[in-house]
Image 1 (tube, rainbow, N blue to C red):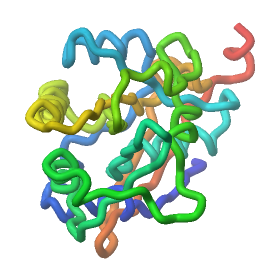
Image 2: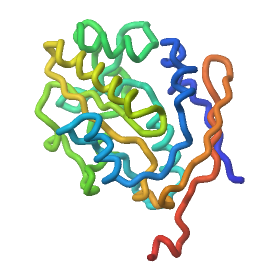
Image 3: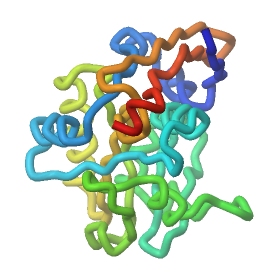
Image 4: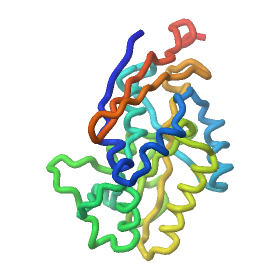
Amino acid sequence: MNTKKFFIAFSLFSLISCGTAVKKLAGFKNPKVEDKKELANYFSEVLPNASTYFMKVNEIGNEKEIFNNIVSGLNTEILLFSNSGEKYCYLGTEECSGIQMQNAFKNFTGNYSPCKENNSFKLNDLLNKITDIKGNTITIDDLPKADYYIFQNWNKYSGSKKKLKEDIDWLLGLKKNSNLNIEVIFVNSDMLEDWGLEEKGELPIKFKKEGKGFTMTFGELPLKTKQQHND
């Protein structure tokens, strides 16, 4: 079997520092290939009258792009941007993403500033990686008007619908009780049929703890055959 192995301390370290890594992994299921319309309906049951965006690949069936999307979907880094496109980074020392999120809403200017890296990831770089349910490219003009944007990943395989609702309610509660003019943009990170994957296919994933992080080993992607692409 063709497998790929990733060390994901960068994406799960914040969960460890929050003391929730074991709980998070306990509810983790092998990702399955999903349909965008079904995912949109699923999300509307969790958060009525709200939309979700979707991750995309530029080349259908490109394994590298697909694996990158899956790993990006597991990343707990807070993706926060100004409406001018600058990415903002956390100034504190707390590694727990939950604490970083709380501090964004409590005292934004004291806890966040534009990232200092020379070639920092910009808002347009992220928007180029996502689409709406119809597959249309997203621009900043498609987003609600706000001073800042937080992009929040969600998926079906890392927990139950009840847990997803609890997480979203917590995040939107922070927003409601804050004076910060910020919008939360939800992006689904499930595997999609649109990526050239077989309907209802599944990706085996194994975790192994190594130091302060985990090694994540992917099994074989459920890619569609050439014949299926042509049907």
